[in-house]
Image 1 (cartoon, rainbow, N blue to C red):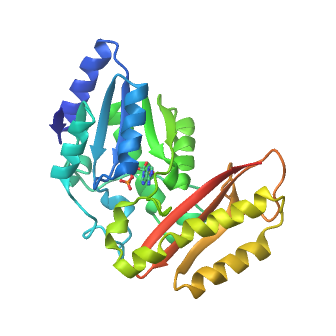
Image 2 (image 1 turned 45 degrees about the vertical axis):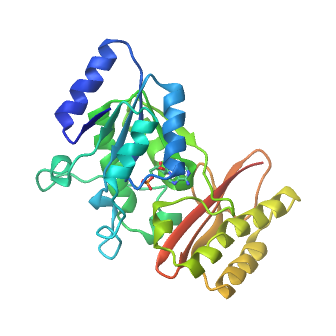
Length: 282
Ligand code: AMP
């Protein structure tokens, strides 16, 4: 497995593969790899001849009061996991390799980031779009796998690929969960024992609302208000909990047959922010 922090080296490696007509799958990550990341890598492996995993804690997607410095970094373990899965190359650049000079460009989004995580994390998706744009230009993969866990990110990147004409196919990896339903996340490591016990409540709540939808309920505002109150009574602080149109990521008040939706929530347990979602195809 080639481990490199050099843009030039990963580029020339991928070029050689492409000359041999090998297809390239790409899994961008911020490291501290867990089973969710490993599933994305397996998916990439099943669909491409060579897989590149990037490990880069991207400073541009952290707000000033967010956890950039505390974000878990465990490259040795990550490399071991990648080797075990027979990843062809890990691209782990330094911040100065990715952002050498003060940048003279910025990318702004004018839709898709108005609600959900975009509303509470200003600048977050701009940071994601900049880094993934750069990573796609560096690695030039045939396909890239991202998790449903970060559904708003997936939708924004899908749109970026279309609008900026990136020659890459995006694939969505299912959410990998702990036995009690909690979606795996590198940030789960921040939870105290007590907080960890409460953490599965977010997914349970989404499942309860999903059951109502399965039972034919189409007006969800009362139901969602009640679920929010229950979560708060359990000591979880709600950032958002709502149902959004899959295409626009705008909240919807009435569900219609034949449409796709995202039931999504973000909560704080103590100072840890957890997100989760369920895709609803009616
Ligand atoms: P991150 O390292 O948190 O930036 O995540 C890298 C990729 O892993 C993103 O595409 C995430 O959506 C995906 N991911 C994170 N958690 C999970 C999970 N529990 N199941 C599946 N994919 C995940």
